[in-house]
Image 1: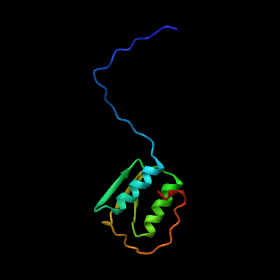
Image 2: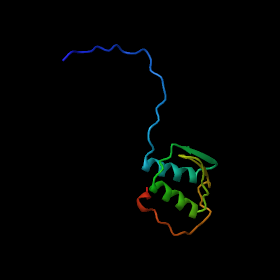
Image 3: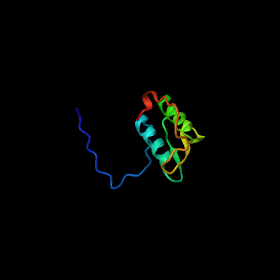
Image 4: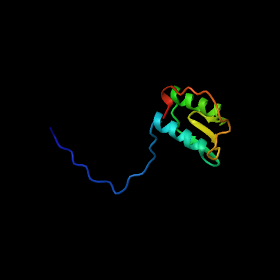
Length: 95
């Protein structure tokens, strides 16, 4: 086998886009909902578990709005959900 010698680059630059993660997506949704002010979440995993989390937040009075695929606007409730009692089914989204 022939060896190939690579010289180190002086600098690397670029953009890396990682796929969305279920656990991180759900944690970000919950934290964004509890925050003060609005949050735009980008690269949100589009999966059943994140859909269930968004539905659960809606039942608690947080009206998330999809701005584009994988981009969600989440209005913060400043630590207090508007709806005090709600039946929630979180499936595997119970992060």
